[in-house]
Length: 267
Image (cartoon, rainbow, N blue to C red; front, side):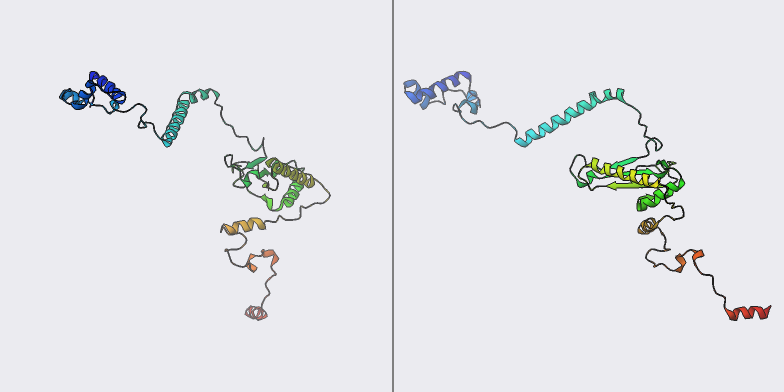
């Protein structure tokens, strides 16, 4: 209910006057305030008219969580505006992506990133290179390079190397060298580069020839057996037997004398 303006003025005046003095007008207001107002004015009453000055107001603001939610909505709308109005302007800077071929960039460097978070694996670096693209002098140097690489040589490109299977540079296989011993990625990459240079330099030396030495493929057989694809043994878990040896290594079967004599008598 809200009082009319004329009555509110009298009410405020009498409330302040009642504190300091008394008069006949105030006494009349105290004794009979009801009959001085009409029924409609008596119902039009507001609580703000009787609150004392300096009284505590009911807070109408939202909480801290509400302000955080509003800030998130503002940030979201800001990015939506940028996407709608600014991103179309980037079309002018669009360029087609042409991945480098294995002919122009034979060295493929692989690194690991966790989006800026610290992790021990982020310092690791790995290099994959086809043997055919290394500066080797002849086929003997390529054979020696494969032997020096050992288990780091594979006839096919590793799955995590980033080299496509359609590349034509894998006729002599691939070499993969990785390092994570140093605290900095550049230090690991430098060690791999120096190691590869030493292998190339040693492979080009003609002091000894390794053309008559076969390649050691036991690491390839073990890898094939781990994924249950066969390998040297016919079945995984079966111990090797005489059937696994090459035929030219096996001795010639000895003939039985009894059977030989029977064959001669029959003839």
